[in-house]
Each structure stands twice: as structure tokens, then as C-alpha cells.
Image (cartoon, rainbow, N blue to C red; front, side, top):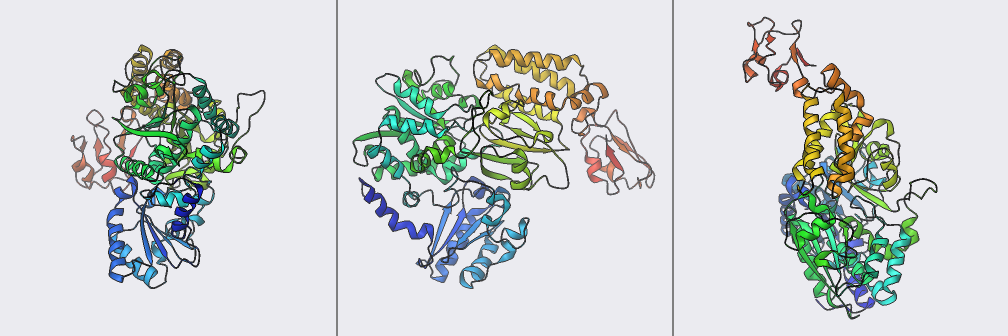
Length: 632
């Protein structure tokens, strides 16, 4: 690879690859894209890729067809996904593919010119006539900035990133802007940290730039740990150069020459693609020494996390990079003054950095025009740009969605997510993972932004959005997240180490049918102490799921405590399985399925469940073909 030193050099690389990316009508090429991120690979995309590769070779079409392994396109339940970008500019999305379907699709579509409609997105979505993901409500309602290249380019080819105007932002910064100009653009853009707290990115960079020291560091938090969250992984696997370019820009802005990406070791595909991207960037002179011939130097290192949730906290993460046990430090001093190895450091997460190059290229006003505005006299500061959510749970369309700040929960769940399946009612959405809170259906029209969510006892978090229906018990949900936090506490401070455990014990008491009304007061009192006295964000936000469910679903707590019943029929110790003698045919299937012999009765006679023996496993109900068994 030749070292690039000018904008003309970047444009020359772009010109060489632009036909393969944009596919103008006269390119004469077809581009087949297979999603081979972690999700696609796990769903069986590798055999699909190999089958198409073999079909291309067998047909002798290597010069006419380009086969690309790309990142996640975002619509997870349809993996493996194959997209055909034809020479005429059309795009066809094939879903739930396997090797046999891929072979048939290739023969009919690529060789025969006929779309194999039964494999396309249409028969699997709300519109049977749709053949492209771009035409679906899932995709049309999104605004993709962070995910602009994911599922489009080959993340292992730097030329494809350059062809999408990659590294033009760092060229502009190094040749046209002073460090303070870069920081001012970030301040004017209104970009806030996407890791959860929402601290203004430009302000963090400003503090670090003003701090004095012999050395400064730029760090990236890629240690994504929230249950159900995979936004950062998608960017790392689908567009790693966006992160590298942004960190280089940040380094120039604050006066740093070295950085670290702290990525969890459980992300092997992301690690591999980051390593390839770093080496390619160095080979082109876009990273390392004398970047783009400007004399600016920036070295980038990878460090692997062992999966400790607490290392998502900035000081704990830096301690881990230093080779020590990942534990948070008291603040102040803040990392912008004294961070990694005791020198000024900035830390942003992957999604935050993924916005930077686009802000530089398109301008602060472009970015700030999206999202919500500040409301004078209120706590609402405004949230500019877009937010990526990992949409999961009881939802028709699972996957990654990127929407402008200010989009409502209702729009995300019903318009993009396709609503709750199986005719069930939408009950709540858990935003922000273990640090967040549950948003009830009654508040589904509230705008999604950092400050508005706080007013209802929730928070943005890193972007997990778990949808729940009427079959979910909110007490059980609160217990699930609190149990996770207890396990992940580093144990350094007593409020988090002991307080969360006491809260968990009270929740266990409630779901087992032994709760008392005073327990609700105890939970709220403990939550106040833990939130105010814990050393880091893990403990400070740990009570949020409990507090939000007590606030919005207090009736469910009361039912568990007073009525000794779980309204959603989830909490096992409060369940009772019974057999309706009018419906029971005496087939004995339930008795044979019961693992503890709790069911008795004669053949062709109604059976009975001995409640003292029943372990609430539900095997009897699952076995009964006559609907004679119910739980209440």
C-alpha cells in the first residue's frame, strides 16, 4: 500500500473503488453482500457465503460479481442475510438463508435475472411485495449516521471505507483546523456521550486540552456489558475505521500521541477486524507516524477486557488498562486532569466516536439540527443527533435501530419494531440495562433523550431497549437486573457491595410470598443510600430498575405482598397449577410428565395435583392437549 499524503491521494483510492460501492448503472458489476458479523455467523452465514463463492467460481463470473463479507445490517431475526446490489442500482434483501437457498437464489436471480421472492424480506415482513430492506418500515424510519456503513462495506478493506469518504475528516482536521477549532465544532454540535451519562463530548475534550502534562491519552470504551446490548460490537465489526479516524481526530484536538481501545475479549470478530483495520491504516500512513504527511503522530493500542461490568466505568477501565484489578477511583480528580497512568485522558465509547468524522465533514449545525432542543427553565439540556438502540425482548423486529433523538418509545416499538407479537399487549420497555429503568406503556409517547427519560425515573444508558408484554412480571424484572448488578459489583465500597445484596434479599422475600408492605419502604430507603453513597456509576444507578418498577407498577408489588399472587404468573412460589375436572379426560399424560409424582388419578377419570409435592415446573400444563390445566 502506498502512503497517502494528500487529498488527491485519498480521492484516487476512492475513485478506484467507488464503482464497487455505489454501483452506478454503467459499472456492469453485481455486488453480493453477506452479513458475517457475530450474529450472522452464529445463525449460519458462513456456509451461505461459501456456497455463493463456489457458485460464482463455477459460473466463471469472478470479473462480473463481487462477493463481500460485511457487518450486521441490523435486522437480527432474519439472519443469515444476503443482499444483492445489482448494476442497475437496485437492492434485494434475502433473509433466513441457507446454502440450498443461496444456490437456488444464485441460479434464478444472478444467472436468470429473476428475483427469488419467497426468500426476500417481503414474505417475512409486513408487506409481501417488498423485496428490499430499504422499503420496510423497520428501515425507512431510521436515520443512519453511526450505522451508515454497517452491512454496506467490507470492514476488512480500508479502500471501501475511503470510498465512502473515510479519512477525509482527519485530513480536513490536520490541514485546515487548529485543535481549538475541532473542539469548538464538537461543542457546537451538541454531541453528548453515548455511553450512558450523556456528558457533552466537546466539554470533555476541552478540559483535557487545557490540562497540562508530559503526555495525554485518548481511550475508547468498547467493553459493552449491558445485557442485550450489542451496538458497539456492530460498529467494531462493520465499520472499524470510523473509530480509528475519530480517535485520531480526538488526539489532535487534545494534544495526544497515543490511545487505547479497551475491547472485551468475548468479541473475537471485533478484535480481528480492529487489528486488520489498524494495520491497514498504518500502511496507508493514516495512523502512526507522520499521518498524511502532516507531522502529526498517533499510535493506537488494543487492550482486552475480561468481561467485568464494572470496567465500563471510566476509572475502573483505565485501572484495568494499567494491568491492575478493575476498580473505580474517587473523583475528582477527573480523568481529563489525571487519568490513565496519572496523566490527562479522555474516554468515550464506540458510538460517540462513530459520530465524530461525520460531524467534521457535515458541520456542527447539520448534527445539531437533529434531535431535541434545550428547554429554558427546565432540566432539559437538549440531545442532538441520533441514538442507536439494541431492540430486543417481546418485539416483532429485533435488532439494531438508529433514530433521531426525540423519537418516542411508541414509534420505536410499534412503527420500527413492528409491535408486540402474538396479540399480546405492550407493557413496558426497559431502557439503559441494569442502570436504567422501566418505562410503562402509559408513557410510551415520551421523547427519548437523556434528560426527559430521567424525569420518569429511567435513563438512556448505552442503548439497550428490552420490550416487555403482559406476561412479564415487573417485580421479577427488577430482581433480574439487580441480581446482575450484585454479581458485577467490584465489592470495593460498602453501599454497593452490601446495600444491593440487602435489596436483592427483600425482592426474593417478596416473590416468594413472604413480603410485607414495609418492605417497599425499606427498598426505597436503601435505594436512596446506595445511590448517594456508592463510589461509581454502577452502584449509583443499581437501584433504578427497582425504583422505576415500584413507581410505575406498584400494584404488582402489592399483589405479591398482600394477595400472595403474581399477576403475570411468573414467580414460581406464588403459582398454583390446577386441573379442571370438567376438561380433564383422564389420559394420564400429565401424570407421566410430572417429575415428582405430584399428579394422581385413574385412567379416564379427572386427575388431581398434590400442591404439597408440586414444584411448579409447568411440565403438566405443557403436556396437556385438552387445556385442562391452568396456572394462577
